[in-house]
Image 1 (cartoon, helix red, strand yellow):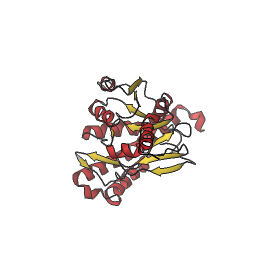
Image 2: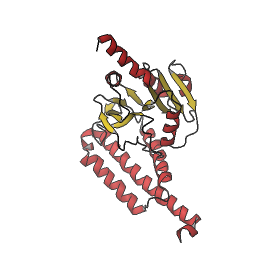
Image 3: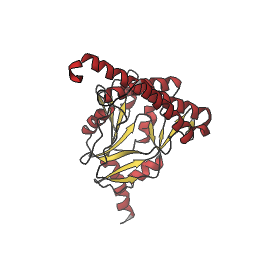
Image 4: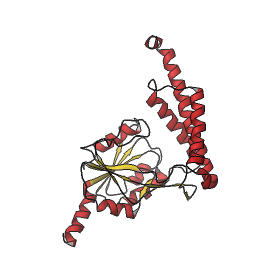
Length: 270
């Protein structure tokens, strides 16, 4: 293959892939995210109710198409965004993930196969530091796939690309991820994710106060000791404690919603 043909093939990868990003009140980071994917032909921003200027920022980019819709759970929103894309190849990103030039070039040079899904690692940052402990690295996620072959699960939270029967291709280079800005952000996301977890598993999974307590305690030990969070100093301890609290509250809330369901529908549980 000639150099010109190879260059054309590489360029076409970026025209064959739609970048799909879910947003809500993402103004602080969305500009950096969109800068990192400015070479892609189509970027679809699926906004679920921003009250800041996320949409105004997104509309400044010529390759960005903005759709506004209510939030219906992460999995369902991902799939609805995918259905709006003009391309079959989808690169799903979070609104706090930045594509590194190395990862973009790696994607650009792929020989895409519809029977494959593609994962990449994430370098997660907190308090200005790259966190390599607490299970935060390599934090590999499947994000590039063909929508004619697969889709996201419909999970309310922690949704995943369904990769059953498909070949997994692991990319080398990472995306940069800034999941939390502050302690307040930690607490807000803990509340949101535990609520979504309880909603998703209501009536399908058992829980209790003792189970919530055990899950929280075990999660802290796993994050801080087994996943070596203690090597991360104050940040490692904070993240481990956050992981533990999230585990505790999601199982506690699940116990509460299950109990409420039983009280409301006694005939179903007789």
